[in-house]
Length: 474
Image (cartoon, rainbow, N blue to C red; front, side):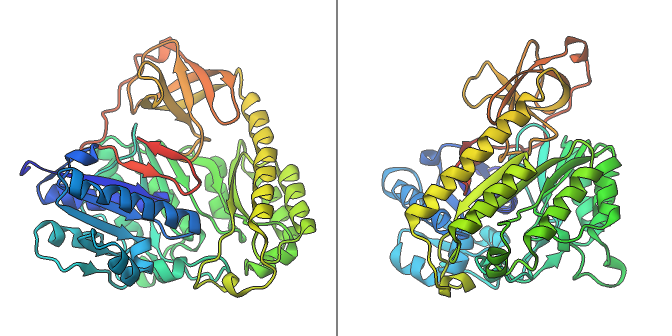
C-alpha cells in the first residue's frame, strides 16, 4: 500500500543497468513508495550510475551533483547512489560527495529496501559477485510499448585490455533457464510482447551452469521464444566467436526470434585485436560476418568499435574503415578510448592523442551514417510489422514505434501516420520516408481492428542517459 512518499530514479548507461534500476524501482514500490518523474517532488532520489568509460563516469558525477542540489532546493531528504561507479570508487565518492546519504554497488539492488526503511548504514557497497537478478525479485518495467529487457547472466570471464567489467560485475553467473522463463511468463502476462535478452557476455551463457541447470544459449533462446505471447525475442552482446548451428538456425528460421545480431567487434586490424586481447584476427571476423549474412535472411547486424586505443596507427584505422565499408553493418556504435586505471590498456605505450581519436570517431561515424541512410532508404515501399511504443518524445500528436530491426533505446524509430494505434500493438506499416536513422510509415487501416495489447502493469518512465551520448527522457 502506498505511503504517499515519492521516489525519483535516474538510470545511466546500458540496458543491463536499466534492469537493475527496474528492480530497485520494484523494491521501492514494495516499500510503499510511488514513482515520480519530477525529481523536485521526490523525497528519495536514486541514481544508478555507469562507470565503464571516462565519459560515462563524468556523466554519472554530473548527475549526482545535479540531484544533490535538490537536497537544499527541493523536497529531497535522501540521496542514494548505486551501480558501477560506486562499486568502483566507493571511498572516493563517499569522501568527495558528502551530500550522498547511501552508496550501493552493482549487486546491491535489494539493499535499497533497508535504506528506505531507515535501517541502513551509509556505505552498502558489497561483493559484485554476490547477486544476479531472479524471477522472484520485485521489478517495475520502464520500457514503453510492450517491450522489456531480461538479464540472463551477470559478470564476465573475458580479459579484454580496455574493459573493467569483471572488476565491476564479477565473474560470469548465468541464471537457470527455468528462472528466466518464469520471468518471461510473468512479463507476458503483464502485456510484454518483445523480450530483449542481455548480459555482459551473452554467447557464454550457461558455461558456468552444471547438473540439471546445464544449458547453452540456444536452449534458452528456444525456451523463451516458445513462451505463449512472446512475439519478438532479441539477443544482445554476443562475443565474436564461433556461433553454433543451433543458434544460427533459431536466428534464421524461428518465427519469434528476431534476425538481429548485436555483436561488438571492437576493431578489425590484427595488431589492434591482439593489443585489445580479443582472441581473434580480422580475417576470422570477416568469415564470421560472411557466415551470418549468408545464413540468416533479412539479418540486422549491429556492432561497436573503439577508436584511439593505445597503439592504433593510421594504417590500422584505415583497415577498420575498409572493414566497415565492406561489411555495411546496419548499426554501428563508436566509442573513443579512455584510460581506465585498472585495465591492461592503461599501462600500454603508444597513447593516441585525444584530437586524433576524435577525428577518427567523426570519420567512422560519418562513414556509417551514409551506410545507415542507404539501408533505411532501401526499406521505402516495404510493409513491416511495427511495435507501437506510444506518442513521440518530440510531438504529442505523432505516434512512434519500432520494426524488428530496431532495438529499444539504441536504434532509430518509425514515426507513424495515417491512422490510430495503441501502445503495445504490433501493426502493419508501409514505409514511406527514410532518414539516416529513423523512418516514416503509414498504418494499414484494415489492420486497425487488431486486438489491442494491454500496456504492462505498473509501467513507469525513468530518466535514461545513454553512454553513447544519446539522451532519452522516456
